[in-house]
Image (cartoon, rainbow, N blue to C red):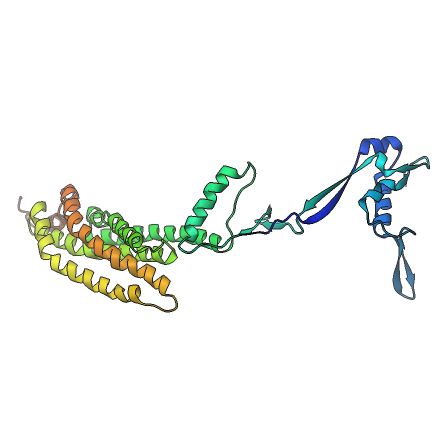
Length: 343
């Protein structure tokens, strides 16, 4: 670990008792000019000689003072012309300060740079540092991540926003295609179980939840929806033909079992090279591969078991799509003046 703030630079602080100096008739400008003349050189004016500017400097004939204790022996002239020692109204303090004060977000900051042990992820380190900061940092002092940690933090928020937008887009598209919000909800309610399966696959394989695995989770939303569409769409078609909810979902689960398994196997086996591959960037590809390979493989079980259960609970709340077609046909015939048969 490396901490940028090191109090190794010596500093001498001169504190002037303004009330004493005023009582003694000593001006602050006189104190300032005396210190500058004795410690360094005081520029009093400039001369212009042959178009050249030459500064006129005032300095001590005995040389500059290099010992802080000698400052107490300096004298300053008061308003009545008397010479007074600085020690009468000046105190000196020696302390150590940082050679350089860094700033982050327009505030003074102390940068801490630390390496991570093998197997210790950056996200875990950030959580541990935040917990430790809440315990030991006093009021008025905050913490801000920079460099790789800040990038990871910002990216996580962006991925979370992208994930929310992906869920919303999938819901709207499914609702438009199914012409039913409930059918779209049946599919989306299985997505959390698929994400849990993906997280379990990452945990089982020792893969961290990083940027690449988060991208894989967004991909998994679409893959989960694809398997659910095969079952829900066929069940809706059976209901349009007059089947009950229980008969429709039972028949759809049995008939669509093979297509769902084939779709799952093709996708999972297609992600297998990402898991087994090596070389440069293998860690990133492996994170995405395990989300698809492990997450979708386990999530297929949820697709086959949960979709029939959720469909049987939500489908009775909405009429089959055929009812809308029959109602529209009746309205059109009524407008054209044709007799409408009573149902």
